Length: 208
Image (cartoon, rainbow, N blue to C red; front, top):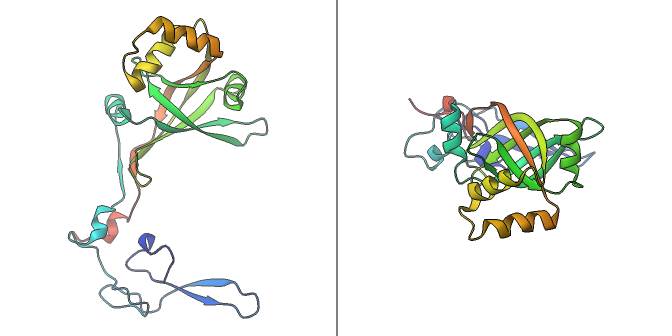
């Protein structure tokens, strides 16, 4: 049976065989994999019913407007930021991000970091925002980015902190700390975004 059984279609059964010459595993479609029958691997194939435990893992794509996007991002601060390297390949960075009041996305970093240098050279970026669970819903946001340097970005830093942690007990102290650390912000203006997606079994595998 497939090592990733949770991802296998109920109408497909993965079986393995090993090549005696190379020792490599080969994957084949089961000849007995038909709806309503039992496969040789012991898996009952057919449509997924509502009381099946896997009914909680139904793939979905939900188109959202800007307000719904903001609602989805609320409380979700674990992001993956994609910028572009010199050679055109993506640079992926795990970041803590927040949405500002005007709809821009903000990520705190340092001017010498690769992602900041990439943005100064190429403003086209993408951000993946996900929930607390790995298999939770997620969205990809594409946009145009700029690097906000201090002191000009002082107000944006305040909004960035507020979007993630709420009110600071001493905003003057916070501003001074950001300046002392020499930080900057990557500020992204969204230009488009994907549906809010959730992975899982395709709807066609479920009972009507």
